[in-house]
Amino acid sequence: MSKKQFSGTSNNGNVSEAVSIAVKMAKEELQTDYIDWELNDVSGSYGGFTLQTNLTATITVRATKPSVGTNEPHQINNPQQYDGMRFIPNLPYQSTNGSQSLIDSINSKQTLESKQDPIEICKNLLQSLLIDGEKLPPIKSIELYHIRCLAYGMGEGKEVTGVYFPPEFLYLADVGYPYLAGISIISPRIGQGAPDFPNFKNAAYRSVKSRASNDLIFPDVTGEIMVGTHEDLELDTIKELLAPYAYNIHGNDSFFTAKCKPFHEKDTCREIETNIKQVKYASTNSIVRIIDIVPGWEVDRVL
Image (tube, rainbow, N blue to C red):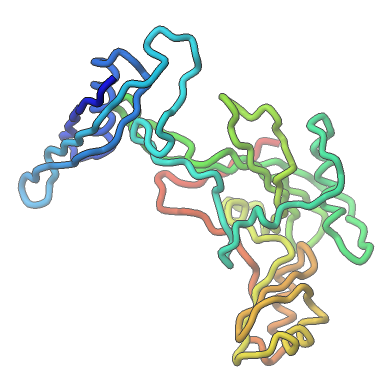
């Protein structure tokens, strides 16, 4: 069919509400739940000093198949905007130094079958991370947490609460190290759920200071530190200085990244700052997330 324009008006000056009203009108007139649409115009008027009283959004709509009455599953034709909810990115975080932390995914030779006991998988993956023949201490406890970002949006003309990113789960083990040992997995939705949960193939290690909500939501990337120096240093010089504490050192001038003993990052940073006078600071590589979303990040223990 040819394209057609629809307009929705929000008395409260809410763009999402205005667009949702226009989408609803389009669905009713075209008698289909399957449409493509694009925003053409937003206009409004103010009352008093700064009170937005009316806001109108105009969209251009084209109906897509299947039509009303189909038994086929619903598909979102424009994933960047649907009923007022914004585009849902695939990755809910990155690290302090700007790298996407899935680059640091677990690289285990072990075959991870979905029928394996996830607790045993966690133990084996933690052991595979340790270096110099170190044995994983006995696990005192292991827990599972669900991390999610909640966001308000408009659906069918009313405010709804949705989940902004794919589900994220954190297995957390207490093995007596300075940090709690974490394994983070993302479970992208397939259909209406995650049929292969828990899938450890794209998991990542996390060093967690405590069980406090902020520490669970914003952990550190395991075994990674950042080092700044008072003056520019040659790479060979900083490698020699850091050799007792870190390895796999990269960088230039006065900023360097390095690997260190897993789940001992804070202690390693403290030793470097104390013992190397050329070092201005040493810090962990922390996970950062978008925080300008309401109501925002939540975490619950599920095991």
